[in-house]
Image (tube, rainbow, N blue to C red; front, side, top):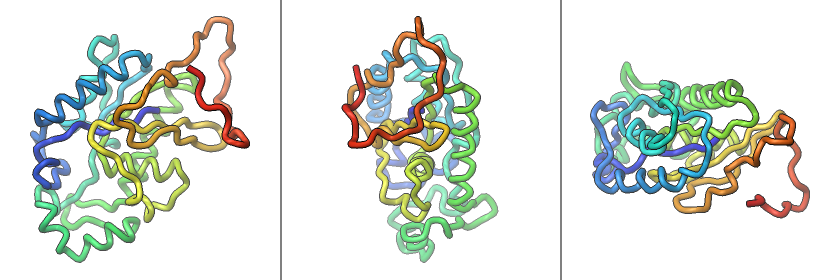
Length: 230
């Protein structure tokens, strides 16, 4: 599974917490970022591209889909954390809110205020359920992409790394970066995190001719192995 964060928006650049605010789109830098990541991922045969319903992710996913015979699939569970009354406010104001320290130090206990707010633990639960479900549906041989948001991707990666949600702020996920997780029967393997320019040849599966369908190997290589063969 390739996790792709949307490209930069004017809200990102302006230090505003966009959340589920409608109409937030990629800025000029973000458009260039997603064009580049779409071109970088072009050699990778994707079985599906699944996106958050928010415009900035839909725009980003469309750049990856360019030239592919695939339809964009949308899953609300990959949508941004519901920040409630924090939505649309400048980060320089939010940092003064007592909840800010909870979000930073004990995010598993953080519940955003207001009728539309949710807890970060719920954000993680729905996002992990989404990627696990899509992964199972698409099958063990599939390479697929999920386009989502910074905190959502960090929460998915924390789960894959076996980290408590309270540690997820240690993970960095930049705009238009890719992170890669391989799910197996025993454990997930985190292959890349916050990659904004690495080679993607290792994500291209070998030809199926002459090989039987098999489950992904759940065993870690003792000693670290020789790396991906390209």
